[in-house]
Length: 419
Image 1 (cartoon, rainbow, N blue to C red):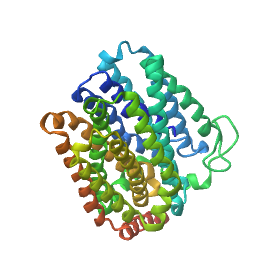
Image 2 (cartoon, one colour; image 1 turned 90 degrees about the vertical axis):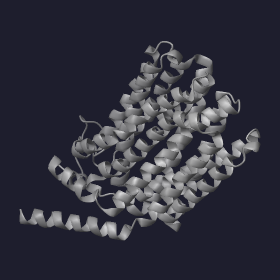
Image 3 (cartoon, rainbow, N blue to C red; image 1 turned 180 degrees about the vertical axis):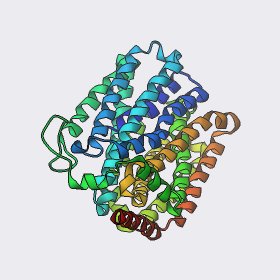
Image 4 (tube, rainbow, N blue to C red; image 1 turned 60 degrees about the vertical axis):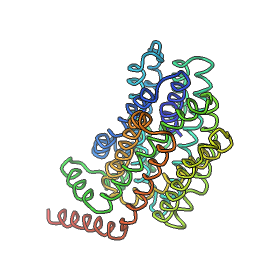
């Protein structure tokens, strides 16, 4: 839920507010591109989290708490931005820091999930994680937009620090594993499992990274998530521009419809998204979701005569967000399956950083695309992206990938025995 709050306000509510106030697609796309950059920094943050921690408090919990503290301060910083509508530089800087600490928190949470969730529960855990995140996005978008239109922009964003502060009580009072410390000065000790998974030198972390990244499964999935990130960035940035500036919606209408569709997708993801992946398989369900997206986006592109029909737009946004949620659950499950536990935060974050790099790239392409294409051509171009990912994921062999990781683990044990 806490991961969804910064995304909802920065990627959706603020762009809708900018569109409502007449900012150009180039300006809005530039803002979204800038706030997307820190999500690519996750690959720098992750190895630090794998290497350092207060182990007696857990491998990742201290980092989660630190990330949320940074988010609180970042939200409060909006109070000091004067005339944000005409100060895009200041808006970008503050948004950049919200994204940075949002990404920081995201790395720690995902690393902790890979660490403590049994493999046979990971798909369902992904459903819960992604579902609750989308609910957080929806509530942040809807409440944030309402506050922007009532109490003013800066105060509305700053007030979200209260929500993050309340959510921070969860990592403050719940342990990763039994017997660990709640806070550095309380009683407790590091668990044997945490000690076994913790790497204590940079050489080993770097060595393991360079062992697992060249595996075919890692390479193919890395390219696939980079490509699908392009679609996410394009759609996230285009929808508020298209509905508000082309169709004449208000930012409130857009926020309500987008938030409602996100909540629907989130709740479905919570209860059945992970179960479907568990039952039918990760790659099969990802492929089905990608096919649904291709059909939906292409169909929408060829029906411009119906774009003034609000019901069609509502249905399209609801369908897109639902399939988007389910696809992300499947993508997360695939990425977790490919991860090596000793460098879980780094390995998983590499995939997510590539996806977010693609998202920032996609957002940055919105301005040039809108200047050179009509809306139908833009949507047709977007539909090509999930088709490319669909082809790529067919080349991932989970069994062969896991055998390679098992071989690396055995080699490490043999080296330890010899030493």
